[in-house]
Image 1 (cartoon, one colour):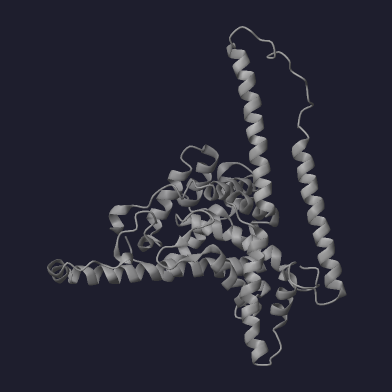
Image 2 (cartoon, chains in turn purple, cyan):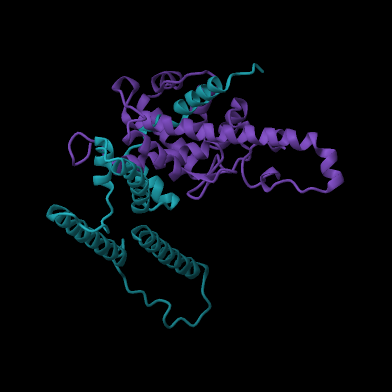
Length: 205
Length: 163
């Protein structure tokens, strides 16, 4: 809560949402302060602003039954980011289909495709944003060299254990230790470990 | 593999993410501050951006002569930049206090940068050295060089943050 009584601390929320935005962007191979969703120009700050604005004017409502305010806002923002990536992927799919159906005409007239139709090798291809297998594969690769983190990743991905207590039981450790390892996973994510693992290009191009 | 509806696929990835990297709630202010600072974000600039967006939204209400939603009003109060002209005495006091706190913070940073972590010792071993440097000498010099580099980087980092 803020100094103003019953209202939330907006500066704290801005900070925490931006940090969470960094995590979400990194999960989808978009890294760093200046990252934007390819083809949209939307940055982490854009999503934070939008989420806080929607909350401030009552478009996003917080009910305690849905969890803490930070969880409600963070989840709304995460879904916005995924939707933006997905929407972009649909546009790309459509434009790819249009290009291939017009291939002959284009080759005859030597028409150059729009800039956005070129493969964006520097950015991840958003078309596989919801590809669970690829997501899991990249997470696994990112912790390959760190046994403590690898154990958590395997417990979640292979044993399908989701709660810290369940993971702790399986690994013979405490839930606090699992929380610490998750913190280390977030840190690894933000320092670029997952970002640096490229998505499969064959699928997208 | 079974083809999932987009919402279903999104929910599954969200669930995995939550189990692996935690819920948004798990990022506290301390961790957030550290993460943002490492990534090169300026928190004041972030607040200013959010303020501008909310202010633009508030204008719609003012134009329509409607009351601001309480949350929006509170957000604008909280995020109001220190550079904005004070509207009353309490804001003037708040801005002055925040200004002084920033100066004190900067002075503390400067002082901590000038004071070494380890006590200063005067080393004259290389002053009149005639023989070529040994491996041990080079190691000592490299260590000093690294320490100085780190200190400069730290100072640069703090300076960048405070801008």
